[in-house]
Length: 171
Image 1 (spheres, rainbow, N blue to C red):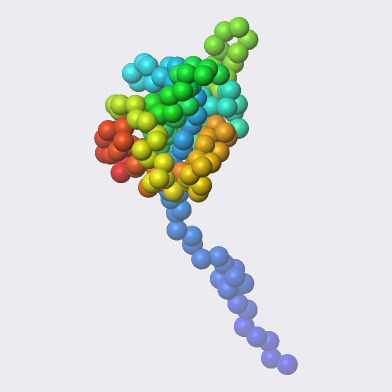
Image 2 (image 1 turned 90 degrees about the horizontal axis):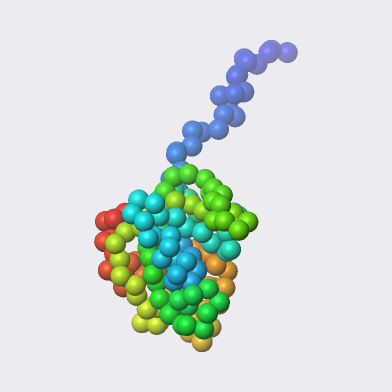
């Protein structure tokens, strides 16, 4: 019996090189009272986001370069002073979530955000145009989660309504 020539299995079974995967830029709506959201963008070059009463897990889903818009259902936390407007918009910066001591034993987690100049914009005129709104009568459902992903289309609607510069938001 004649022996077959040896063939290096590694060349037969090697995985083909994989192209670098560039994940798309994410878009997020974060929910907080206007007072809290405005605090996050009050200081130039010191912007941050804090969601879901300071929990770290939601912030781990948000990546550097993602866009975030803050929606405020009310002016004050737990208040009956309805606002229902987007109050800030920006780009998430590099870095992991970090704990920040706000005093009185409250140590929430934050991520840094570079906010762009924008004006507050009511949500009502946008509701019929959002892709994430499946049922106009229950449009507020997604906001109950405190942080949720949206499409480029929806983020652009928000940015345009707020008069935010598209180039600053990397479009």
